[in-house]
Length: 135
Image 1 (cartoon, rainbow, N blue to C red):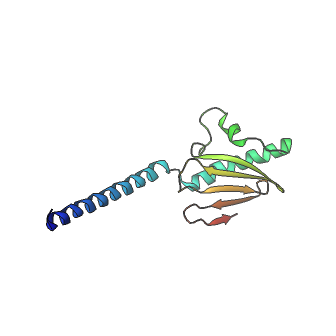
Image 2: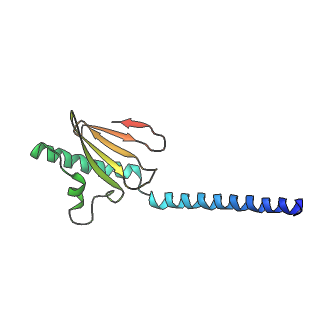
């Protein structure tokens, strides 16, 4: 095989690899755009408030927290805004309970909300920056 054909073949392979990388990047952007379209501020405004009220009500009623996620999903449709994109996990701590509102699936663009100290303090974990914010 001549050196010229070898160069042409390598150029074609390099172009195919670049094209494949471009297509994969475009697909990742489309998935991110359409699967992660729930804004964080909407989830924080609606879902965090509903979970906080539910947590306060359950603690006042029985002193314990059950499965908040199942309780909110068991009601009539439509469910609370954000339940399609988030799940609610209750963790018991030495000081009480932490309620963690996690994004479902693998979406790396949604924040995680943590209600600490039995709902008195909200902590937000931003996935892309890894930073935390408290309220």
